[in-house]
Amino acid sequence: MASPPPDLIDDATAEILLRLPPDDPACLVRASLVCKAWRKLLSSRIFLRRYRRFHGAPPLLGFLYNIYDERPCARFVVAADAATTFPFSAPAFYRGRAVP
Image (tube, rainbow, N blue to C red; front, side):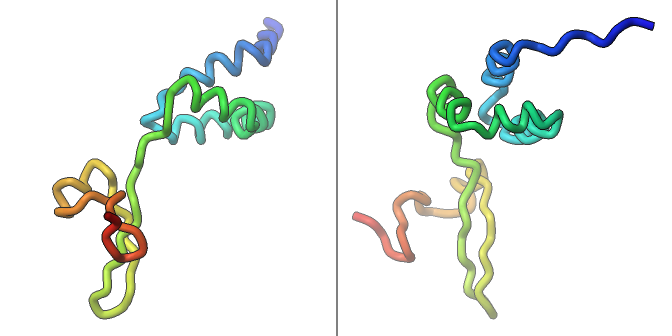
């Protein structure tokens, strides 16, 4: 029987995880479930700072839109669908009133 492969060096692991695509945040979640060491690395402030510097600002996944029909209900709107669903731009509204 062959011996198990050696562990990757922490720096090499961080470099690999740093290149996970920012447009699919589920990749980071799945990677954090691999082992405790990866979860600790992915949730560290140092790694998150490097990830943001490497990829830029995180993408807007969506926003909550309050609907007041019969009773108040918050609805999550995917950012890709927002342009076709709403005639206004989401960042232009703050606490229910337009921001100049």
